[in-house]
Amino acid sequence: MKIIGVTGGIGSGKSTVSSTLRDLGAAVVDADVISRSVTSSGGRAFEELVEYFGNEIVSENGEIDRAKLASIAFNDKVKLHALNCITHKHVADKIVETVEFLKGSGIWDIIVIDAPIPVERGFLDLADEVWVAVADLETRINRVVKRSGYSVEEVTKRIGSQLREDEYINIADETIFNNGSVEELEQIVVKLFLQKKQEWQR
Image 1 (cartoon, helix red, strand yellow):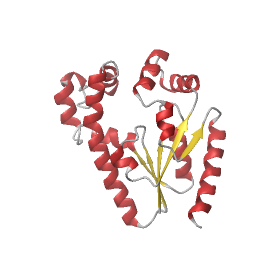
Image 2: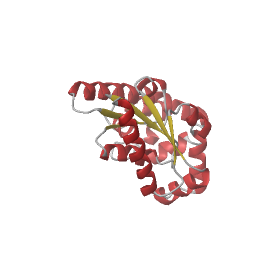
Image 3: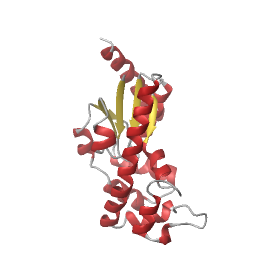
C-alpha cells in the first residue's frame, strides 16, 4: 500500500490531480470535505469557531456563513492564524482516523490525501510521497476568478495567504506543472501514476 499526499495552492489543479487518481482506483481523503464537516453545526470545530469569531458568523440556518468567515479571516493575519489553528487540529484528527480505517479495510492499494495546506500531522507524517501541483500565478488567478466569481483582488489575497510556490516545491517528491488544459493535466497524472506503479512493484 502507498499513501500519496497531493497538495498545491488554490488554482494549481490539485483537485484534478486527486480526482484523476480516484478514477485510477485510489481512495481519496479530501481535507476540504473534512473541513466542511468539522465546521458544520454539530461538528468538532463549530463551537470553537463561534466562540472565537462570534455569533455574526452563524447564518439564519444555524450553519457557519463561510463567505463571511472567509472575509473576516482573509483580511486579518491574526484571525486567519486562529481559524487555521482551530480547524487544522480537528481536520488532522479526522484524516488520521479515515486513513487508518481505509488501511484496515484491505480494499485499496493507493490512498490519496488531498490537502491545500501540507501540515505535519495528518499529511506529511502519513504520506509515502508528496505530489505538488503548481501553475503560473496569472493562470491560477484566472482559473479561480472564472470558477468562483471572486474578484482578482480577493483571489490574489487568498493566494498570498498560502505557501509560496517554492515552499510547496521544496516538500515535493513529484512536481506537476499545470499551465495547460484539464485534459493535459489528466494525461500527466496518468503517465506519472503508471510509472510509479511500476517502480513500487519492483
